[in-house]
Image 1: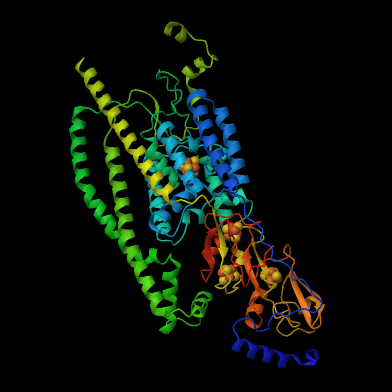
Image 2 (image 1 turned 180 degrees about the vertical axis):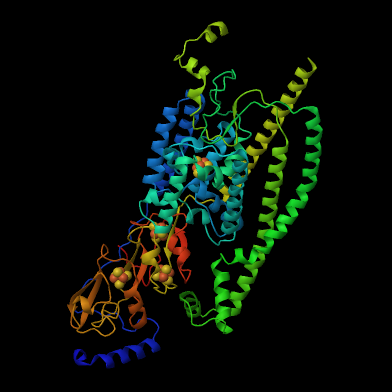
Length: 434
Length: 192
Ligand code: SF4
Ligand code: SF4
Ligand code: SF4
Ligand code: SF4
């Protein structure tokens, strides 16, 4: 009578059984009564069809956005599109997958042949970029859920001094570079891990991320779209493409009459004032500065590469295998007491430690090269930024800076020419114009 | 007059440069499209954990972005020994071998124990109650057949671009699997 056996004996028996047999310590019974085994349920994930629907909605939203910004010039239309995008891509799709995060999938797939990116992720990465080459940052204007949530919270924009704006803008490049490094090495998707708004989209998340998100939203009440301007890694790409876009949102529907009414209209510091060409005295100085900067560029690039490569051991620890190898080595050499879940799990696999060390070493070398590349990239960015600041362009009109303008359409209504176009204003201007 | 001409050539030159760079950008994007699309799969990828790697550390219950984890315990019935003293069900030294809460390993009482025939009992998971803590999995792995194991349940999972649990899993048990085969089950495939 097995039921009468005392528990300790039973446990000892079980323990013995555990040692002798790895699996099936107790052979599954043949039921005399013909008991039917239940089936393990396997609920299916969302059908692929919905993924394609997401891509189709993205395409439609981008097209609509382009029409609203360039043709209709309607801030209200853009605002409604923003609400829709926030509801669809944010609340309904819970902020995943987004174009910003797709950078990492693309980077991973380029460097790791085992990772195959789904078509929809590629569409999310490329579609907004294609649109930007033609129409400017339409994606930011009304499609990106991160951009729209920030835009909606804008309350009382404060002016950020231009030098600070330029300096903080470099953070985005740093973020992009490190995110690509970590994604390409298969270490982590930091853009997803530190997405400040995703907790709102999902209406759940860790406390830290929630606090971070609230902080960002409070900042965004006063510094419009702070994440977009200073951090967004996708924004870096969009800025780059928007610079050469075929069409772009313009403040005035036809001509700038230099009325200065739009000067303070942009909460994102994107409106540039007309600038006179520098006097010839300054011009010579400017040339000298430019030559100096051009010489500085390679120096800056190399030193930044060298400096960043020094940080590669720290970067490498982002990879789980490197961390694990470190830990195992410490444990084996008596530098760490006890074991961790990870080291236990590793030992349970029976894989020799030497193999792990080798994997880690290869990874460390990859990180060393990657850190050099990251440093060179950052050095180039800083150098080119300095050169860009040194080259003063001659401007005769009030214009939205193609890189920083997110095409939100706020400034349209400030322009008297626009109000004429909308027939809100009948002025002598039009009469003598025609 | 000359300054006008100068600005005009300047403008033309700038226009030309812009056009050329736009062409280069488009070329680059086209190249990226080609390179990516040639390798891409139309099949979506989803996250799943390999039950043979999982050590039931408990992170699955706490690291999911959902309030209640998308990971739950599932049972491979064909593997189960239908033990009367299920070490996935009972505390290591239960006060009594009955379904009293004080005897159970599961903190939420999510495992239902039903009598089949002497001396066999069947254990089924009440999924809405299960929080994916893996306590039963640990117990079943230690002394039983290992027929209880954790899986990402795809009716709940948001399929985050990077699964938060994957980043925290000490045994690196998480992988991306094709959405057409979204489970990594133990034992014979006897699925519904
Ligand atoms: S800058 Fe980035 S976060 Fe902002 S709207 Fe554009 S893509 Fe979205
Ligand atoms: S985090 Fe990993 S080891 Fe821990 S319970 Fe989940 S799958 Fe298992
Ligand atoms: S012990 Fe944990 S994993 Fe097992 S059924 Fe209960 S809640 Fe689920
Ligand atoms: S992908 Fe997201 S929702 Fe799914 S199990 Fe991982 S963290 Fe939870």
